[in-house]
Image (cartoon, rainbow, N blue to C red; front, side):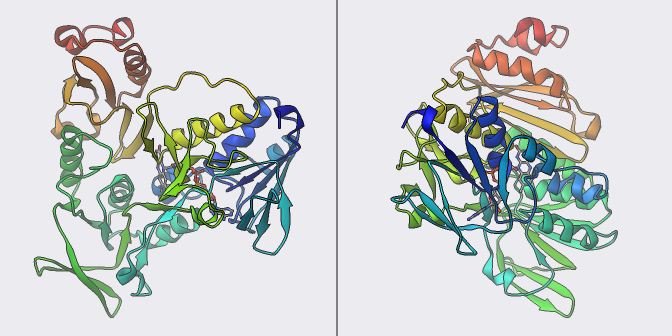
Length: 410
Ligand SMILES: Cc1cc2nc3c(=O)[nH]c(=O)nc-3n(C[C@H](O)[C@H](O)[C@H](O)COP(=O)(O)OP(=O)(O)OC[C@H]3O[C@@H](n4cnc5c(N)ncnc54)[C@H](O)[C@@H]3O)c2cc1C
Protein backbone atom coordinates (compact mmCIF):
# COMPACT_ATOMS: atom_id res chain seq x y z
CA UNK A 1 0.00 0.00 0.00
CA UNK A 2 1.47 3.38 -0.89
CA UNK A 3 1.15 6.27 1.54
CA UNK A 4 -1.47 7.87 -0.68
CA UNK A 5 -4.12 5.24 0.04
CA UNK A 6 -3.69 4.96 3.81
CA UNK A 7 -7.20 5.78 4.93
CA UNK A 8 -6.95 5.10 8.60
CA UNK A 9 -4.18 5.14 11.17
CA UNK A 10 -4.94 3.91 14.67
CA UNK A 11 -2.68 4.88 17.57
CA UNK A 12 -2.93 2.75 20.71
CA UNK A 13 -1.77 4.64 23.79
CA UNK A 14 -2.57 8.30 24.43
CA UNK A 15 0.79 9.14 25.98
CA UNK A 16 3.98 10.88 24.84
CA UNK A 17 4.65 8.81 21.72
CA UNK A 18 0.96 8.66 20.79
CA UNK A 19 0.55 12.44 21.00
CA UNK A 20 3.78 13.09 19.16
CA UNK A 21 2.78 10.68 16.40
CA UNK A 22 -0.37 12.75 15.76
CA UNK A 23 1.64 15.97 15.44
CA UNK A 24 4.21 14.27 13.20
CA UNK A 25 1.57 12.69 10.94
CA UNK A 26 -0.28 15.95 10.42
CA UNK A 27 3.05 17.80 10.16
CA UNK A 28 3.99 15.44 7.33
CA UNK A 29 0.68 16.20 5.56
CA UNK A 30 -1.17 13.01 6.38
CA UNK A 31 -4.79 13.88 5.59
CA UNK A 32 -6.50 10.56 6.38
CA UNK A 33 -8.26 9.41 9.51
CA UNK A 34 -6.39 9.28 12.83
CA UNK A 35 -7.96 7.44 15.74
CA UNK A 36 -6.26 7.73 19.13
CA UNK A 37 -7.24 5.03 21.62
CA UNK A 38 -6.24 5.39 25.27
CA UNK A 39 -7.04 3.30 28.32
CA UNK A 40 -6.66 6.35 30.59
CA UNK A 41 -9.54 8.81 30.84
CA UNK A 42 -7.16 11.75 30.28
CA UNK A 43 -6.03 13.40 27.10
CA UNK A 44 -2.31 12.84 26.42
CA UNK A 45 -0.10 14.32 29.13
CA UNK A 46 3.61 14.58 29.95
CA UNK A 47 5.00 12.22 32.58
CA UNK A 48 8.30 13.95 33.55
CA UNK A 49 6.52 16.48 35.84
CA UNK A 50 4.80 13.66 37.77
CA UNK A 51 7.78 13.14 40.07
CA UNK A 52 8.59 16.86 40.30
CA UNK A 53 6.24 19.79 39.59
CA UNK A 54 2.96 17.87 40.01
CA UNK A 55 4.01 16.93 43.55
CA UNK A 56 5.52 20.28 44.49
CA UNK A 57 3.05 22.52 42.72
CA UNK A 58 -0.05 20.48 41.97
CA UNK A 59 -2.42 23.34 41.20
CA UNK A 60 -0.11 25.32 38.90
CA UNK A 61 1.40 22.56 36.80
CA UNK A 62 0.16 22.05 33.27
CA UNK A 63 0.97 18.66 31.81
CA UNK A 64 -1.49 18.25 28.94
CA UNK A 65 0.24 17.74 25.59
CA UNK A 66 -2.80 18.07 23.32
CA UNK A 67 -5.98 19.81 24.41
CA UNK A 68 -9.45 18.78 23.25
CA UNK A 69 -9.50 21.81 20.94
CA UNK A 70 -6.10 20.99 19.44
CA UNK A 71 -7.14 17.39 18.82
CA UNK A 72 -10.31 18.62 17.14
CA UNK A 73 -8.28 21.06 15.02
CA UNK A 74 -6.03 18.18 14.01
CA UNK A 75 -9.11 16.15 13.12
CA UNK A 76 -8.33 13.29 15.48
CA UNK A 77 -10.99 10.91 16.75
CA UNK A 78 -10.24 10.23 20.40
CA UNK A 79 -11.42 7.18 22.31
CA UNK A 80 -10.55 7.40 26.01
CA UNK A 81 -10.92 5.14 29.02
CA UNK A 82 -11.41 2.19 26.70
CA UNK A 83 -8.18 0.26 26.19
CA UNK A 84 -7.37 -2.09 23.36
CA UNK A 85 -7.64 -5.74 24.38
CA UNK A 86 -6.81 -7.48 21.12
CA UNK A 87 -5.23 -6.97 17.74
CA UNK A 88 -6.60 -8.99 14.87
CA UNK A 89 -3.81 -8.43 12.38
CA UNK A 90 -5.36 -10.57 9.61
CA UNK A 91 -8.52 -8.46 9.69
CA UNK A 92 -6.54 -5.23 10.24
CA UNK A 93 -8.62 -4.37 13.28
CA UNK A 94 -8.38 -3.92 17.03
CA UNK A 95 -10.89 -4.78 19.69
CA UNK A 96 -11.61 -2.43 22.58
CA UNK A 97 -12.47 -3.27 26.17
CA UNK A 98 -16.15 -2.47 25.55
CA UNK A 99 -16.21 -4.88 22.60
CA UNK A 100 -16.08 -2.25 19.84
CA UNK A 101 -13.96 -3.12 16.82
CA UNK A 102 -11.91 -0.44 15.03
CA UNK A 103 -10.31 -1.01 11.63
CA UNK A 104 -6.87 0.27 10.67
CA UNK A 105 -4.58 0.40 7.67
CA UNK A 106 -1.56 1.17 9.85
CA UNK A 107 -1.38 0.65 13.60
CA UNK A 108 0.99 2.27 16.08
CA UNK A 109 1.48 0.61 19.45
CA UNK A 110 2.54 3.33 21.90
CA UNK A 111 1.44 1.64 25.10
CA UNK A 112 4.43 2.58 27.29
CA UNK A 113 5.15 0.55 30.39
CA UNK A 114 3.83 -0.27 33.83
CA UNK A 115 5.67 -0.07 37.14
CA UNK A 116 7.54 -3.32 37.83
CA UNK A 117 5.76 -4.79 40.86
CA UNK A 118 7.03 -5.91 44.24
CA UNK A 119 4.25 -8.34 45.23
CA UNK A 120 5.26 -8.58 48.90
CA UNK A 121 4.87 -4.80 49.26
CA UNK A 122 1.64 -4.72 47.22
CA UNK A 123 0.27 -7.41 49.53
CA UNK A 124 0.46 -4.97 52.46
CA UNK A 125 -2.58 -3.31 50.92
CA UNK A 126 -1.89 0.21 52.20
CA UNK A 127 0.87 2.81 52.58
CA UNK A 128 2.65 1.43 49.50
CA UNK A 129 2.88 3.45 46.27
CA UNK A 130 4.37 3.35 42.78
CA UNK A 131 4.59 6.15 40.21
CA UNK A 132 3.71 5.90 36.55
CA UNK A 133 0.54 7.89 35.88
CA UNK A 134 -1.22 11.06 36.97
CA UNK A 135 -3.34 9.34 39.62
CA UNK A 136 -0.18 7.79 41.14
CA UNK A 137 1.39 11.24 41.38
CA UNK A 138 -1.75 12.85 42.81
CA UNK A 139 -1.89 10.10 45.45
CA UNK A 140 1.60 11.07 46.59
CA UNK A 141 0.71 14.74 47.14
CA UNK A 142 -1.24 14.35 50.41
CA UNK A 143 1.07 11.58 51.58
CA UNK A 144 4.29 13.60 51.31
CA UNK A 145 3.71 15.85 54.33
CA UNK A 146 6.36 17.46 56.54
CA UNK A 147 7.72 15.01 59.11
CA UNK A 148 6.43 11.89 57.38
CA UNK A 149 8.94 9.06 57.15
CA UNK A 150 9.20 7.87 53.56
CA UNK A 151 11.16 4.89 52.31
CA UNK A 152 11.96 4.94 48.61
CA UNK A 153 12.98 1.62 47.15
CA UNK A 154 15.21 2.04 44.11
CA UNK A 155 17.91 4.67 43.65
CA UNK A 156 17.21 5.26 39.96
CA UNK A 157 16.00 8.48 38.35
CA UNK A 158 12.44 8.18 39.69
CA UNK A 159 13.64 7.28 43.19
CA UNK A 160 16.03 10.23 43.36
CA UNK A 161 13.56 12.70 41.86
CA UNK A 162 11.01 11.59 44.45
CA UNK A 163 13.63 11.81 47.19
CA UNK A 164 14.23 15.38 46.10
CA UNK A 165 10.51 16.26 46.05
CA UNK A 166 9.99 14.59 49.43
CA UNK A 167 12.90 16.52 50.97
CA UNK A 168 11.47 19.78 49.58
CA UNK A 169 8.34 18.84 51.52
CA UNK A 170 10.40 18.18 54.67
CA UNK A 171 9.81 14.46 54.80
CA UNK A 172 12.39 12.18 56.40
CA UNK A 173 13.62 10.20 53.42
CA UNK A 174 15.47 6.92 53.15
CA UNK A 175 16.47 5.50 49.76
CA UNK A 176 17.24 1.80 49.56
CA UNK A 177 19.32 0.76 46.57
CA UNK A 178 20.59 -2.76 45.90
CA UNK A 179 23.40 -1.65 43.62
CA UNK A 180 26.66 0.02 44.51
CA UNK A 181 25.70 3.37 42.97
CA UNK A 182 22.64 5.55 42.37
CA UNK A 183 21.30 6.01 38.82
CA UNK A 184 23.40 3.01 37.88
CA UNK A 185 21.51 2.36 34.64
CA UNK A 186 22.07 5.76 33.10
CA UNK A 187 24.88 7.71 34.75
CA UNK A 188 28.66 7.40 34.87
CA UNK A 189 30.08 6.72 38.33
CA UNK A 190 31.60 10.18 38.74
CA UNK A 191 28.24 11.92 38.34
CA UNK A 192 26.44 9.28 40.37
CA UNK A 193 28.83 9.95 43.27
CA UNK A 194 28.28 13.69 42.91
CA UNK A 195 24.48 13.27 43.07
CA UNK A 196 24.76 10.84 45.98
CA UNK A 197 26.70 13.44 47.92
CA UNK A 198 24.09 16.10 47.10
CA UNK A 199 21.26 13.91 48.38
CA UNK A 200 23.12 12.96 51.53
CA UNK A 201 23.99 16.62 52.18
CA UNK A 202 20.26 17.42 51.96
CA UNK A 203 19.49 14.79 54.59
CA UNK A 204 18.45 11.89 52.38
CA UNK A 205 19.59 8.65 54.00
CA UNK A 206 20.81 6.74 50.94
CA UNK A 207 21.63 3.09 51.61
CA UNK A 208 23.65 1.46 48.84
CA UNK A 209 24.20 -2.30 48.39
CA UNK A 210 21.21 -2.84 50.64
CA UNK A 211 18.86 -5.77 50.25
CA UNK A 212 15.39 -6.08 51.73
CA UNK A 213 14.54 -9.29 53.54
CA UNK A 214 10.84 -8.65 54.16
CA UNK A 215 8.16 -6.12 54.97
CA UNK A 216 5.08 -5.99 57.20
CA UNK A 217 2.56 -3.60 58.64
CA UNK A 218 2.62 -2.70 62.30
CA UNK A 219 -0.52 -0.64 62.83
CA UNK A 220 -0.17 2.30 60.44
CA UNK A 221 3.60 1.82 60.07
CA UNK A 222 5.38 -0.10 57.34
CA UNK A 223 8.27 -2.08 58.77
CA UNK A 224 10.99 -2.94 56.28
CA UNK A 225 13.53 -5.49 57.44
CA UNK A 226 16.86 -5.34 55.67
CA UNK A 227 19.01 -8.39 54.93
CA UNK A 228 21.34 -7.14 57.67
CA UNK A 229 18.51 -7.59 60.16
CA UNK A 230 18.02 -3.84 60.68
CA UNK A 231 14.38 -2.72 60.80
CA UNK A 232 13.31 0.55 59.20
CA UNK A 233 9.91 2.04 60.03
CA UNK A 234 8.04 4.39 57.72
CA UNK A 235 4.69 6.05 57.17
CA UNK A 236 4.85 5.07 53.51
CA UNK A 237 6.95 3.20 50.99
CA UNK A 238 7.25 4.21 47.35
CA UNK A 239 9.03 1.83 45.07
CA UNK A 240 10.48 2.65 41.67
CA UNK A 241 12.38 -0.35 40.40
CA UNK A 242 11.85 0.06 36.68
CA UNK A 243 9.06 -0.68 34.25
CA UNK A 244 7.69 -3.63 32.35
CA UNK A 245 6.78 -2.70 28.76
CA UNK A 246 3.04 -3.02 28.02
CA UNK A 247 3.68 -5.56 25.27
CA UNK A 248 0.92 -8.11 25.91
CA UNK A 249 -1.16 -7.03 22.90
CA UNK A 250 1.83 -7.60 20.66
CA UNK A 251 2.63 -10.96 22.27
CA UNK A 252 -0.96 -12.13 21.78
CA UNK A 253 -0.88 -10.95 18.17
CA UNK A 254 2.23 -13.05 17.52
CA UNK A 255 4.54 -10.10 16.91
CA UNK A 256 8.22 -10.51 17.71
CA UNK A 257 8.69 -9.47 21.32
CA UNK A 258 11.79 -9.57 23.45
CA UNK A 259 10.35 -8.19 26.72
CA UNK A 260 9.59 -5.12 24.59
CA UNK A 261 8.21 -5.05 21.04
CA UNK A 262 11.01 -5.53 18.56
CA UNK A 263 11.06 -2.92 15.80
CA UNK A 264 13.40 -2.21 12.93
CA UNK A 265 15.05 1.15 12.32
CA UNK A 266 11.77 2.43 10.84
CA UNK A 267 9.89 1.41 14.03
CA UNK A 268 8.09 -1.34 12.14
CA UNK A 269 7.32 -4.54 14.05
CA UNK A 270 7.53 -8.03 12.53
CA UNK A 271 4.16 -7.17 10.90
CA UNK A 272 4.84 -4.38 8.41
CA UNK A 273 1.47 -2.64 9.04
CA UNK A 274 2.08 -2.46 12.78
CA UNK A 275 4.60 -0.10 14.33
CA UNK A 276 5.70 0.48 17.92
CA UNK A 277 7.28 3.53 19.56
CA UNK A 278 8.36 4.79 22.97
CA UNK A 279 8.95 2.83 26.16
CA UNK A 280 7.26 -0.28 24.75
CA UNK A 281 9.60 -0.60 21.75
CA UNK A 282 13.08 -2.04 21.45
CA UNK A 283 14.59 -0.65 18.28
CA UNK A 284 17.30 -2.01 16.01
CA UNK A 285 20.22 0.42 16.30
CA UNK A 286 23.16 1.17 14.00
CA UNK A 287 25.34 -1.13 16.15
CA UNK A 288 23.19 -4.09 15.02
CA UNK A 289 21.54 -4.63 18.42
CA UNK A 290 18.06 -3.83 19.67
CA UNK A 291 17.87 -1.25 22.45
CA UNK A 292 14.97 0.11 24.46
CA UNK A 293 15.20 3.68 25.71
CA UNK A 294 12.83 5.06 28.33
CA UNK A 295 13.01 8.80 27.73
CA UNK A 296 10.71 11.61 26.71
CA UNK A 297 12.92 12.43 23.72
CA UNK A 298 13.03 8.83 22.50
CA UNK A 299 9.22 8.60 22.56
CA UNK A 300 9.00 11.74 20.42
CA UNK A 301 11.77 10.65 18.04
CA UNK A 302 10.32 7.21 17.42
CA UNK A 303 6.86 8.71 16.87
CA UNK A 304 8.49 10.89 14.20
CA UNK A 305 10.22 7.91 12.60
CA UNK A 306 6.89 6.06 12.43
CA UNK A 307 5.06 9.02 10.90
CA UNK A 308 7.71 9.70 8.28
CA UNK A 309 7.94 6.03 7.35
CA UNK A 310 4.22 5.64 6.72
CA UNK A 311 4.30 8.87 4.70
CA UNK A 312 7.34 7.73 2.71
CA UNK A 313 9.44 10.66 3.93
CA UNK A 314 13.14 10.15 4.65
CA UNK A 315 14.31 10.32 8.27
CA UNK A 316 16.85 12.97 9.21
CA UNK A 317 20.17 11.67 10.58
CA UNK A 318 19.71 10.48 14.18
CA UNK A 319 21.10 12.76 16.87
CA UNK A 320 22.86 11.37 19.95
CA UNK A 321 20.32 10.39 22.63
CA UNK A 322 19.45 13.09 25.18
CA UNK A 323 17.56 13.11 28.47
CA UNK A 324 17.41 15.09 31.68
CA UNK A 325 16.62 14.86 35.36
CA UNK A 326 15.88 17.51 38.00
CA UNK A 327 16.91 16.80 41.57
CA UNK A 328 17.39 19.18 44.54
CA UNK A 329 17.34 22.24 42.26
CA UNK A 330 20.04 20.68 40.11
CA UNK A 331 19.24 20.22 36.43
CA UNK A 332 21.32 17.48 34.83
CA UNK A 333 21.24 16.79 31.11
CA UNK A 334 22.86 13.80 29.44
CA UNK A 335 23.72 13.23 25.80
CA UNK A 336 25.41 10.38 23.96
CA UNK A 337 27.01 7.21 25.22
CA UNK A 338 27.03 7.11 29.03
CA UNK A 339 29.33 4.07 28.85
CA UNK A 340 32.18 6.33 27.58
CA UNK A 341 35.51 5.04 28.84
CA UNK A 342 36.76 8.28 30.45
CA UNK A 343 35.06 11.36 31.88
CA UNK A 344 36.56 14.85 32.16
CA UNK A 345 35.08 17.77 34.08
CA UNK A 346 35.15 21.30 32.69
CA UNK A 347 34.65 23.76 35.52
CA UNK A 348 34.47 23.06 39.21
CA UNK A 349 32.61 20.02 40.48
CA UNK A 350 32.27 20.96 44.12
CA UNK A 351 29.72 18.96 46.04
CA UNK A 352 29.73 21.56 48.82
CA UNK A 353 28.25 24.16 46.44
CA UNK A 354 25.03 22.17 46.13
CA UNK A 355 22.57 23.69 43.70
CA UNK A 356 25.11 26.46 42.88
CA UNK A 357 27.25 23.95 41.04
CA UNK A 358 27.54 24.48 37.35
CA UNK A 359 29.84 22.44 35.16
CA UNK A 360 30.13 20.35 32.03
CA UNK A 361 31.48 16.84 31.56
CA UNK A 362 32.86 15.18 28.46
CA UNK A 363 32.65 11.43 27.92
CA UNK A 364 35.57 10.27 25.83
CA UNK A 365 36.19 6.93 24.13
CA UNK A 366 39.28 6.30 22.00
CA UNK A 367 40.18 9.98 22.15
CA UNK A 368 36.83 11.12 20.76
CA UNK A 369 34.02 13.00 22.52
CA UNK A 370 31.10 10.54 22.54
CA UNK A 371 29.03 11.87 25.43
CA UNK A 372 28.37 14.97 27.48
CA UNK A 373 26.69 16.00 30.69
CA UNK A 374 25.68 19.46 31.85
CA UNK A 375 25.00 20.23 35.50
CA UNK A 376 23.00 23.46 35.84
CA UNK A 377 24.48 24.43 32.48
CA UNK A 378 21.75 23.40 30.05
CA UNK A 379 22.60 26.20 27.64
CA UNK A 380 25.88 24.40 26.85
CA UNK A 381 24.09 21.20 25.87
CA UNK A 382 23.70 22.08 22.20
CA UNK A 383 27.47 22.57 21.91
CA UNK A 384 28.12 19.14 23.41
CA UNK A 385 25.59 17.62 21.00
CA UNK A 386 27.40 19.27 18.11
CA UNK A 387 30.80 17.97 19.26
CA UNK A 388 29.46 14.41 19.47
CA UNK A 389 27.80 14.62 16.05
CA UNK A 390 31.02 16.00 14.54
CA UNK A 391 33.17 13.24 16.15
CA UNK A 392 35.35 15.91 17.76
CA UNK A 393 38.70 14.68 19.13
CA UNK A 394 39.06 15.54 22.81
CA UNK A 395 41.90 17.99 23.53
CA UNK A 396 42.42 18.25 27.26
CA UNK A 397 43.85 21.78 27.34
CA UNK A 398 41.39 23.29 24.95
CA UNK A 399 38.23 21.55 26.09
CA UNK A 400 38.80 21.96 29.83
CA UNK A 401 39.82 25.62 29.61
CA UNK A 402 36.81 27.49 31.00
CA UNK A 403 37.98 30.74 29.45
CA UNK A 404 37.26 29.21 26.02
CA UNK A 405 33.71 29.72 24.80
CA UNK A 406 32.23 26.24 24.29
CA UNK A 407 30.26 27.52 21.31
CA UNK A 408 33.51 28.47 19.57
CA UNK A 409 35.30 25.17 20.18
CA UNK A 410 32.30 22.97 19.31
C1 LIG B 1 7.41 9.92 36.94
C2 LIG B 1 8.18 9.95 35.63
C3 LIG B 1 9.16 10.91 35.45
C4 LIG B 1 9.88 10.93 34.25
N1 LIG B 1 10.86 11.89 34.08
C5 LIG B 1 11.55 11.93 32.93
C6 LIG B 1 12.55 12.91 32.73
O1 LIG B 1 12.82 13.76 33.61
N2 LIG B 1 13.23 12.92 31.55
C7 LIG B 1 12.96 12.01 30.56
O2 LIG B 1 13.60 12.05 29.49
N3 LIG B 1 11.99 11.06 30.71
C8 LIG B 1 11.30 11.00 31.87
N4 LIG B 1 10.33 10.04 32.05
C9 LIG B 1 10.11 9.04 30.98
C10 LIG B 1 9.12 9.50 29.92
O3 LIG B 1 8.02 10.14 30.51
C11 LIG B 1 8.67 8.27 29.15
O4 LIG B 1 9.82 7.72 28.53
C12 LIG B 1 7.60 8.60 28.12
O5 LIG B 1 6.41 9.01 28.75
C13 LIG B 1 7.31 7.38 27.26
O6 LIG B 1 6.27 7.67 26.38
P1 LIG B 1 5.32 6.50 25.83
O7 LIG B 1 4.36 7.15 24.91
O8 LIG B 1 6.12 5.36 25.36
O9 LIG B 1 4.55 5.95 27.12
P2 LIG B 1 3.50 6.71 28.03
O10 LIG B 1 3.73 8.18 28.03
O11 LIG B 1 3.52 5.99 29.32
O12 LIG B 1 2.09 6.44 27.31
C14 LIG B 1 1.57 5.16 27.14
C15 LIG B 1 0.07 5.24 27.21
O13 LIG B 1 -0.51 4.03 26.71
C16 LIG B 1 -1.59 3.64 27.53
N5 LIG B 1 -1.89 2.23 27.31
C17 LIG B 1 -1.25 1.14 27.76
N6 LIG B 1 -1.85 0.01 27.34
C18 LIG B 1 -2.91 0.39 26.58
C19 LIG B 1 -3.92 -0.32 25.87
N7 LIG B 1 -3.96 -1.65 25.83
N8 LIG B 1 -4.87 0.39 25.21
C20 LIG B 1 -4.85 1.75 25.23
N9 LIG B 1 -3.92 2.48 25.89
C21 LIG B 1 -2.95 1.80 26.56
C22 LIG B 1 -1.04 3.99 28.92
O14 LIG B 1 -2.05 4.00 29.89
C23 LIG B 1 -0.46 5.36 28.64
O15 LIG B 1 -1.45 6.35 28.71
C24 LIG B 1 9.59 10.00 33.24
C25 LIG B 1 8.60 9.01 33.43
C26 LIG B 1 7.89 9.00 34.62
C27 LIG B 1 6.82 7.94 34.84
